[in-house]
Amino acid sequence: MSIEIENSAELDVFRKLSEGSESAFSAVYVRYSPQIFTFIDRMLGLSDVTDDLVQDIFIDLWQKRDFLKNIENPKAYLFRMASNRVLDYQKKIASRKPILDFVISQQPTMEAMSEQRVLYKETLILLGEALDTLSPQRRRIYELSRNEGLSHDEIAEKLNIAKSTVANQMASVLKQIRLYLEKHAVIFSFAIFYLLTQS
Image 1: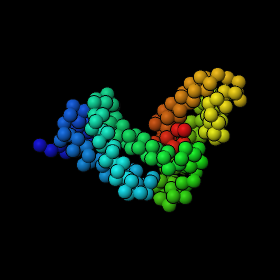
Image 2: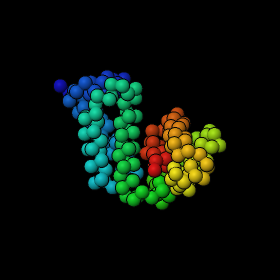
Image 3: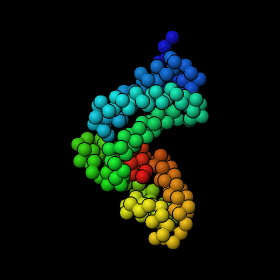
Image 4: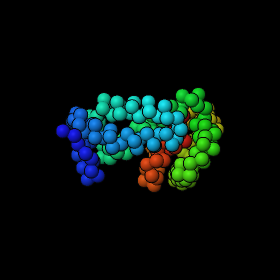
């Protein structure tokens, strides 16, 4: 028996998926795979790669379905999985270049798509607002890491603080920025957030 997803039944279908229902998984795949494909393809523009990533995402969703029972917003969780896949792919082709430089280098591609351009600029604005909420030391650590490309060791030496302090502060900074963006940004901005904040 197939399952069709209505908005009001979304949580129930994901719950059934978490319990191992293959029909629920099929329903989730039918409904969300086209959205995930569009989500990824707008950022990569490589349909063959996008196809592979979408398949990987849903294989991963099935294999880790048990986690869904503790997720309050499974749809957002699914799109974050997609964001992580995009990040992994971008990291490979970026050859570990500074992430911000890589994103800037992709700006002409983003500007070819008006919707993506708006979201890109929106995320940059929100990132700036999020940075304004940081303490002076946390902001300095973030800027040394992301804007100047310094390692944790180099930051610790420059600021005369312990390396563990740098690591802990960076973890707190990224969490604070992520929470700010989750509160203020649309879901389509998550991938850009990860590209801007991960090393």
